[in-house]
Image (tube, rainbow, N blue to C red):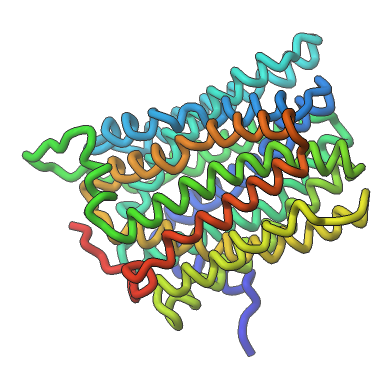
Length: 421
């Protein structure tokens, strides 16, 4: 009898803990942080929509500010981090994120909450998250044995997507019980938990790879340019992320304000997407073993980019709309979870170890730098036309983003061949 996905994840984590007990603490901190992050992803726009009565333009301003640091900061961060120890940097930015989020409930308690303040906090948290994510990506391959890297990514991605199940639903409940501003305290605490998890590692951090060669700022861009897979993946992720922002900034307004779905119901519907992503994360490596990495990625994208085309056509109001939204989120989430595991693993093994931070910085510059553009465009489309039309535009863009991943060089990729030093 086969194991269910939760049992498989725990078994995999147990193997990693046996190899390296530090991973257990790191994994636990990241899991708690992921839950808090998904709480904020729902609570921050709901704070604008419900507490400040903001519409699509206000939600768009927050989303734009959150992702604006991704326009240039990743490239600079990756260049700066290469050759430096990552652990201390990760702890510092976790503390910065926690402190920034605590400002919101304090301002709310003093009746000083405003949209500009929410935008400023979103920008600071977004900038700190860029630094943390790039450092973490380069830190993990030195943190666990290379043979265990796919399993480590599967465990981390599995718990992250599991957090998508509980985070939005928990956020909706907290928003209804405490108000959206106070709900953000959960994320502040979660970042402190992440800092403890990172900082509790018992063995010293591996010294950065020494080299006489000092690559320039654009070395990370070159790593993407010379790899057909990385080029296709970057093009796909950039268009997908921009289009997803157009969709997301309008979906919250469409669901809560126009279709009468409660904040709790909206959170639960998004949680269904996390449940699907968890299932996909557990199946991704198994699918790659059967089909090869390239075909497994393509299969995953059929679900993650094709099914959202139905979002603009969902009928009903209230609970009926929420149920249909949840079903669609669950099915598309399966593809997204699988694709995420494959993407991270392939990039960490395909790129030379001495260029991980720079290449991830370049990758995030291209793929996250478009997020503020997508968020701003989503606000313009939703305000000029309608939220339904903007959701349709976003979903069409997501579907088109899959096309670069179906070129021959990507389809025929059988394994994540490592070229790391």
